Image (cartoon, rainbow, N blue to C red; front, side, top):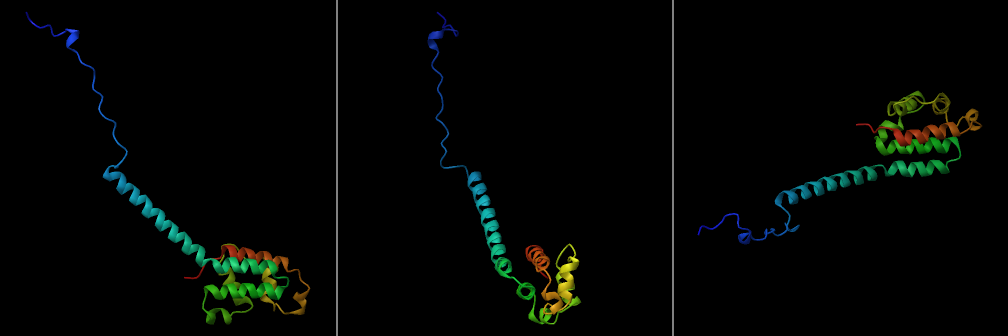
Length: 150
């Protein structure tokens, strides 16, 4: 008697293979994780350095809020400029040269009322009665948006 190949009694259950384990991961996943971790580390270090280098901006903005007079606001601007440029460059600037130096670090021009106060002596009695808000607004904008010289 010939065995029947279609005989169902000879069939066995399907053997399901074991599940693929999650650990240890394939070497490609380890490399990918290392690359992502490296990129995150580099970005974190760069962000920390940028935050650290902008400490003078944050300090100047705090001082600016407490400044209540035009000479005090001008002093905050001058000290902030000294934080990013050599003393020899900044100390010699006054009047038009000072406003030009400030304007060169911005993308938009200095407002006329703020420029008038900076060009004229900040200790001039004519400016003593001027409203310091225009200069304060400009100083706040300059502190937040100026570009450091190379």
